[in-house]
Amino acid sequence: MSKSEQRNFRSVAREAKARLKKGFWENYRQDLAGELARAREEGLNESKVERYFAGKVTYTIRGGEDDGFYEKVKALLLSEGEVSDAIGRLTDKEEFSKLNYEEKQRYTLRLSEKYLKALERFRKECEFERRG
Image (cartoon, helix red, strand yellow):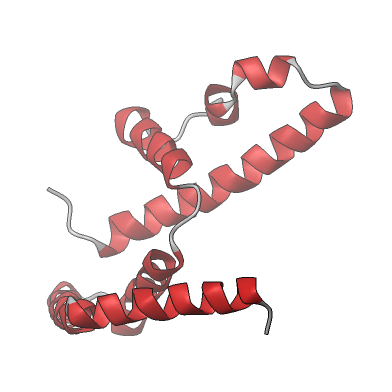
């Protein structure tokens, strides 16, 4: 194992130890039990709720990438709902203007993929998490 791999492994182990010390997993189990009880009361599929929260905790542990982008999408969806020009609104105009035709196509495709992932995440949050 190289030195950088060792450092990375140590850092991951340190983070895991910190989660244990802070009671991360106990809190997760309590929260999950509460959410499953709520799902039962509301007639939601418990296994879907459990998968959603397991995915959410995995995302948290890995250090969610694109959280800033997701927050932009979430703000747009909460304020205006799903709009037909979402990709245009989320485009970084300054960066986009510097790209050639092929790069613009790739940028738009990547942005579209990110938007669809964020939209799916938003829909799941709305379905499984309490609002207000």
